[in-house]
Image (cartoon, rainbow, N blue to C red; front, side, top):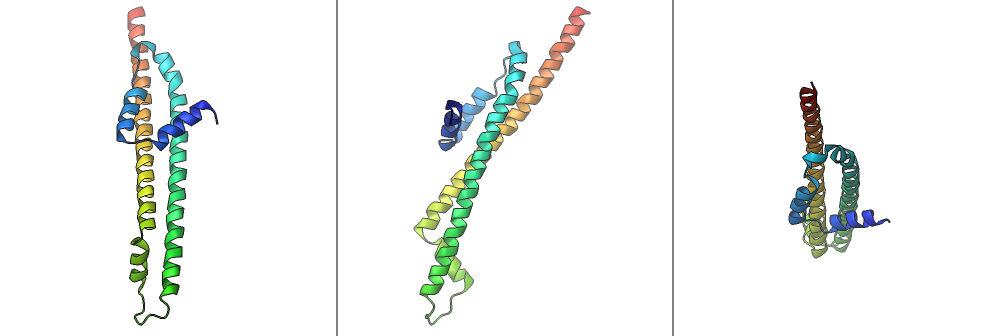
Amino acid sequence: MNQKQSILLGILQTLDFDKYVSLCDELLIINKLDLVSELADQSKRYGYWTGVYAEAKKYKTTLEDELTVYVSKEKKEFREANKGAIKKLTANDIQAHAESTATYSQLKKNLVDASYKVDLVKGLLDAMSQRNGMLIQLSANNREEAKLING
């Protein structure tokens, strides 16, 4: 893993709203005096953050799978432990038991946090797409101004 990958994955792991706002301020600024460099860097920046988005989604999917497996195992164990019970357990009873455990709560919290990070990175990508449109428009405006000046 190279240094850029480590930095990007580190940002993803610690991403919160404050860091998101700072990233927006840092990544979305446009230097109107050097639009050529800005346009050249745009696709690279977008590419990096698309990779971060993919990593965030992969992690979220892993957590979804972990939660599903946990609930299935917990339901099965609870059903087996209560086979001889006088009252027959309903599907709701079994589901409620699985969702009432501390492990379920922690897995669910982890999933919510991962979903939040996916949403933040997606928001950053959307903003970068808007930035790209602004760069193209500013570049076109500069060309038009140059035509007017140069006659």
